Amino acid sequence: MLEVKAMELLEGIKNRRSIRGFKPTPIPEETIRNILEAAKKSPSTSNTQPWQVAVVTGKKKEELSKILCDLAKSGASEKSDMSSTDNWPPEMEQRFREHSANRFKTLGIDRADQEQRLELRLRGLQFFGAPCALFLFMDGALGMSSFFDMGLFAQSLVLAAHASGLGACLQLALTGYSEAVRDFLGLPATKKLIIGISMGYPDPEAKLNTYHSTRIGVDDFVHWYA
Ligand SMILES: Cc1cc2nc3c(=O)[nH]c(=O)nc-3n(C[C@H](O)[C@H](O)[C@H](O)COP(=O)(O)O)c2cc1C
Image 1 (cartoon, helix red, strand yellow):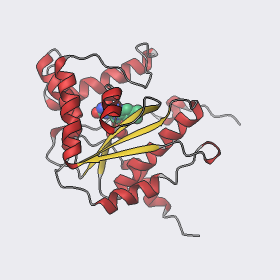
Image 2 (cartoon, helix red, strand yellow):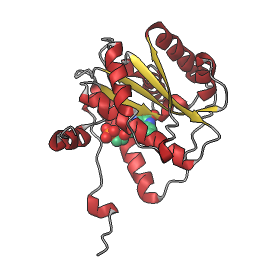
Image 3 (cartoon, helix red, strand yellow):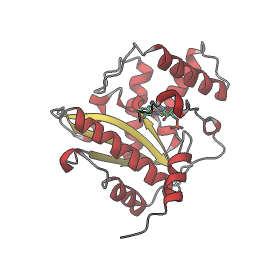
Image 4 (tube, protein in one colour):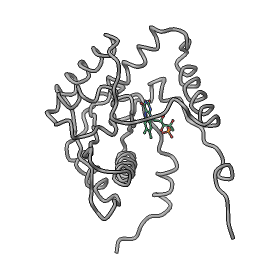
């Protein structure tokens, strides 16, 4: 059995963070394939492996980005396959607000400035300049356990990207126009879009990459029983 370099694995988990600014440098296909080879080792309910992945690069990526940006600019209402809530528990609502406020602060954007807010949204729909976008789908007939599996797969994928010298950002924002994404990729409505991921070589000059998220302490969410 291969020896796991525990410290490197732990360090990688601890220092991964979302990257929201990329160099245009294309990622070699072999590198993307290696990342997917690692991600496919994720555990899943009875080894069912519910994940389906669309890798979108080059001209296709530009075309899809334009479709999404045009929808956003036209004010088209979003309809994600992913359910979220407008009713977060107060402590989560606070973290949500802090995260949002800090990102605006990093960019020097006034929260009331609708034009700049749209700009930021469009930047996300342009995959933050990444050369590669990944869309993770699962069959809509599947249940919560498969949904959980999808999260494990996504985490493995972004960690594998991190270990390959790449950065990534999981983006719920890329699921807002799920029907348009499915149409573009030629997928049936039964395939639910779980998450979109921008992936590429981090741009150290990108202002958004200077933003670092915070975490609550372990003792704030763990209860010990002995
Ligand atoms: C399910 C999910 C959806 C997310 N959607 C977005 C998104 O739409 N846009 C974005 O910029 N970041 C998005 N993120 C990234 C989170 O904001 C980020 O993981 C969190 O703030 C913690 O920061 P870190 O990843 O840098 O540690 C998402 C993360 C997850 C897990």
